[in-house]
Length: 506
Image 1: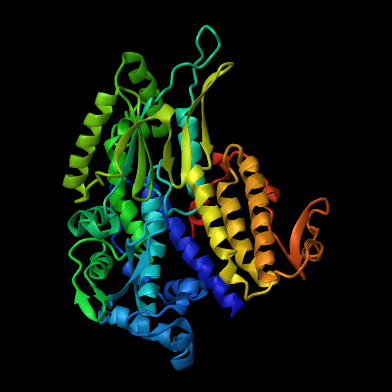
Image 2 (image 1 turned 120 degrees about the horizontal axis):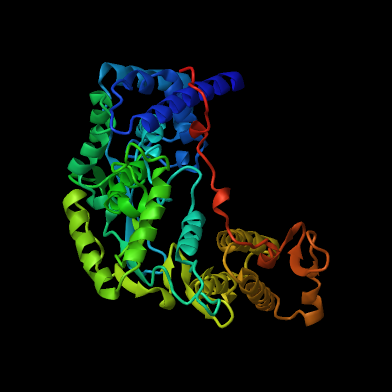
């Protein structure tokens, strides 16, 4: 079975490499024959394995079927072969997604709608994504970081930090001029629910000429949702929660980067005699425009959240904010959120993807930029730990309580480990968590003396010089033991299908 899996993965990888290389070489052409690959049993098996290995495979759609139930009722082979026959005969029709509401973090009373497709629909979406992703990944812009293989929010933040860092010194050897003094914080209102199907399908058809594939994607868009036993049509938007939804949203939202092509990446305006690549040409254009006193706009996007750096005045930033809102309305059918889209001075700082980024003044070196942990995120973590260590939570053992708290601390530390002064924040949080556990033990054992409670403290198994709360083989996770440093753009991964120098055998 392992040999079959390796053979399937090698075959689909060769197909993806062929699609990626073709897309890079032919940015204005369409691929007209994909249906045979999409309905190949090897593609369907690869998509099934990714769905089955995900924790979401235990969640059922409107048909009530999970991965485990499918295996018990039909078996993997019979289910996948039946799905292949449905696709090839044209009898397959997507089912409506089951809608559930998820509370928004830090926003009481507000919920985020999430659609749960059936397992069968997830497998077909996964198969379609395996073939569509290489085509569009070859054309996505380098300033887009959301829902792309090998990219993350840390890469977007480091790119922003480096772009806003002053690069020219004055006569006093200090950097006193910011390259982008103003920032437009962009947020699209209900992005997944408001994407125009017409604009999305036009963009999809510009690169995919196989009508059977585009018709299948269109059926997913029109499948509808089932909310509280009531069927709702989906005339706009992509099925949020579906496997293919992030890719479709990136296809539409690439219009933002296209608007600022001159300062991002020269593609349609390349001169035949030019030897440099588009990104280098865009950097040169930014330099020449800055010398000429013209305003420059540089976008950095993560899914539907984006930052637009502005080198001009506040009035020019406000004018561009209005122009961008009109542009998105006409080209994508989307609207900017009025309360979340605002113009901010870089020296005042702004929040992006849960981080705080801004410029600071140093009397020796001048302006600098740094990414920091927002104070309200620290307060949120403290509040969460406090809720988990209240008087009414003492029915479990110390070991169980540590097993509940540690994953929260570890995930938080890994997310903010690349911030400036992260070690100081981690150290203060370690003290707070230790104090809360001490108070929790006092609630749990009110008659015990302080000496008896201190018996639960001991040297850490990972670093014997540190004393932590422990019970059995479980000990308190120390955030300060997480290595912190500055994130490097070179750490971003490259999709496996993009790492090929020769023509694949597909």
